[in-house]
Image (cartoon, rainbow, N blue to C red):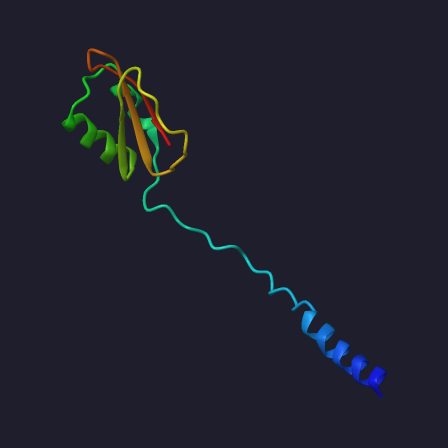
Length: 101
C-alpha cells in the first residue's frame, strides 16, 4: 500500500515538472524609427561653418530627429541610431564630415 501511495505521489510530482508547450512563434515586434537619416544630399555642406542655423538646415534636409555635433578630439559612442545625424567639425568650426548614425 505504501509503494502504491508513493508511486501516485511521485507521478503527480513529475506531472508538475512537465514543460509547458512553447508559445506560438510569431514575427518579432519591429520598432519603427520616428525619422530616418539620409546624409547623401547634404555633403555639399562640408566646408561650411558649424552653427545652430547650419544644424537646423542639416536636420531638415536629412530627415533626422537628432543632431549630434562632434567636436575635434572628442570620443563618441559607437551606438547606431538611424534617426541621428552626426556632424564633425575642426578647431576652426569648419564642417569636415556629415554622417548618419
